[in-house]
Image 1 (cartoon, one colour):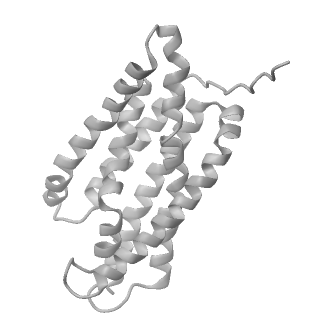
Image 2 (tube, one colour):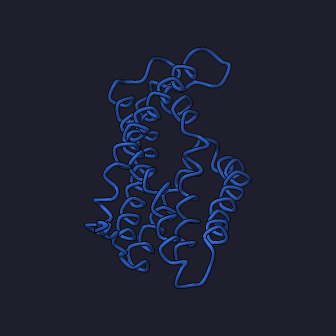
Image 3 (cartoon, helix red, strand yellow):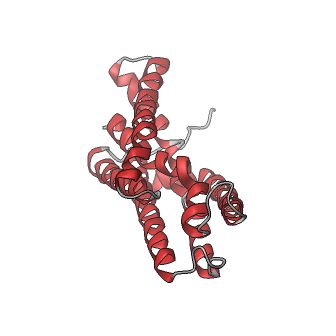
Length: 217
């Protein structure tokens, strides 16, 4: 179950990792690479969003132990995946609204659209922090009962990350072109994978709680 949720989680994350600033430059600012300044302005704003994403990632990392103690690691992981899926859906909705407002190609994006896009990038730091930590903790907790080594177990977990990366890297471009270009089709697949992974994590992974360390006498 941990390997399955890990694979679904990274199928969700890789479209965002591949297209985050490109999405901002193309679908929010309406630019194209090497054609005017709109795309570059969008990429710069996307970089600001990723910086704020890192800030939220750091804050979540500090609070993660308390969250896992209170609700259990599997539950926290599942909820974070659902937050990720909602954020990807919000990106698709933002692209749809931006397209239908009609400013693309004529003027700068409205402040509300830009703020919404940056806010989505920022919130995604919360589930990203959990993705970087909880799966490894869960594997480490369970390997002793299975009689497996730490290195072997983490290597197998890494396969559940690498294989989805290859699939998304190879398939996301043709998938987007199938629907006329843009990044929304790949983000929709990411949202679906993240949501399914979140439900599986909540229902199928026991709520392992992190115990407080016992002080030495």
